[in-house]
Amino acid sequence: MSKGHDILITRYPAARGAAWLREAYAMLSAARLPWILLLLLYYLVMSLVDFVPFIGQLAVPVLKPVFAVGFLAAAWAQERGGRPEPRQLFQGFRSNLWALLPLGVLLLAGITVSVLATALVDDGKLLELLSGKAKLDEESLAGGAVQRAMLFGAACALPVLLALWYAPALVVFHECSPGRALSLSFRGALANWRPLAVYGVMAAFYGVVVPGLVTAIARLLLPGTAALFMAVIVLTPYLFLLVATLHISDYVSYRDIFHAGETASPEADVARPADPT
Image (cartoon, rainbow, N blue to C red; front, side, top):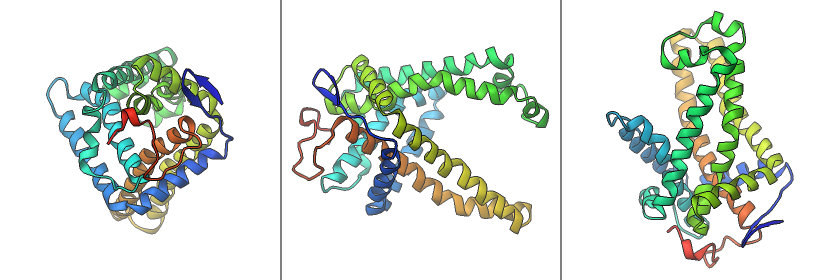
């Protein structure tokens, strides 16, 4: 363990990344409908925010850390005998809101800078595609410039994403300032880069490879429109379950890294001064 003042950071082997997903899915399986309803409510609220003129698209990333607290609170409550509830989605607005909003601003700034930086690799081709000034076609993909730009943008965004990964939980459960939460999150993620790498590979497999295989099989078995319809029917519930699992896994991995050895019984005293529920 390494120590950040009074907050311990535990380092795990690579295999722990797979365990985080398994444990998260087990929690989802125990309360599937409440989690799906919570996720649907989240998408509904964020869609409404996105429609707000002028500020909606900027507000969505700024509010993501605030709503992330809702999923953390739901998982925290479930481990202690409760169930996910719709009201928990808004817990972030009642728990250190003014420390959570700067995290959202950093997310917005980090994504913006990372996307703009791709112009250094492909002379602005990806930016043109994203802005609608150009269309994605075989010629755009053939040269590989767009793919390189996407990888470069992801690499630029990675430090920000690691700093933000556990920051909302650290703000709410530990009452950290935004700066300290970002620092601890980054250090915790670096200390556990091996399990996080395994976690990322598995998330990509279930989120990209599996849907791709299902779509390919549907195209082999059915004609064009029917194949698309069948793929949507099969993949929609699958993707909802996957996204819910990923949200829960944020809590599971946070608990492991920053609360190692603590029990998950209803009597457990996890960060009681900043109890999210």
